[in-house]
Length: 404
Image (cartoon, rainbow, N blue to C red):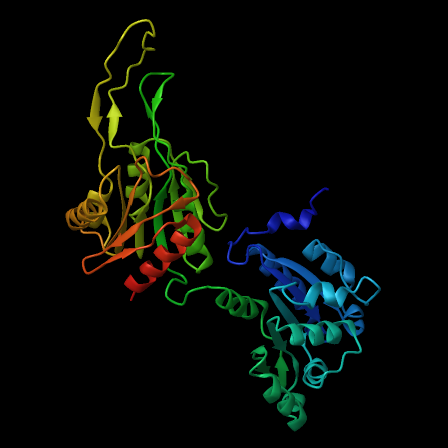
């Protein structure tokens, strides 16, 4: 099936809402035209948006506009396909947004009236406890009407409201960006991480032995890219210096592709001319660089490859960066006590604030799972064996605690 062209924008701003199913109900307010922009913003942060329109709203904007905006068919009436159940029954959607939301829509939801597609979807969602968010729009006199206030009072512990803008005697619909901010916060955007500038490295590096042979390692870059995705979802502005890993970086990050440890080090130094709040060195950068031969090594005889030490990027960061520094320490086939001891030693040598340590020896046999120790100057936190996705969330929480 050919992908709708409008879906090309999905995740172009970030991955905070990836996998989230959001129903956008457009009620009959002049502000209905703003729902197109809201739908597009939600999609740009990863959401799949389906639209339900009231009869009044279809006279203000055509349903085809919303189909173009979302890439999904628009519901303007309920049929034997049971659209209200498909969208709003238990665990069918992650969020129902009513934008703009009129006094009439609020009143129908508060009093269990379901005589339109929107009110029926809301009645089902209310019963299934699917989260509902209403962006209010009406004349000030209506907003201050005692009956409307009573309805809102009844709903306020069960439904979220984004307050209207009080302008020119009207309670005008909140801007799409205001609704988006509310949604992002609801789905995990962090007040501490929002807007923070974070520089990361991830993935392996590749060093040339001769014109056709290279020396590298088995890092996929998965932990680093998952952590980058977590930080983007939390609202951070992430720059990722990425070696040739197989894991896909999040779209919401600025990605700088490199191959060698020297290229990675140079990219980090260049980026650190700008100010970052956090630097995270998750890459499996090479410890050694072959003394490169400009001619192909003969394959019919034994040969020795001479190596020189590569720069340890982490040892240079605190000279260039005054913010938080997070390092990764990998060892192979050591005891957990020795692993933590080596991580503590590296923490002190590099003046890092947090060191993520793990054993990549013979017990490390699944690229989807890992066990790490989070080591700082005060404590050690053991994650236990978990998916790398869950470990990325734990690391994110630890970084949040270090932020002021």
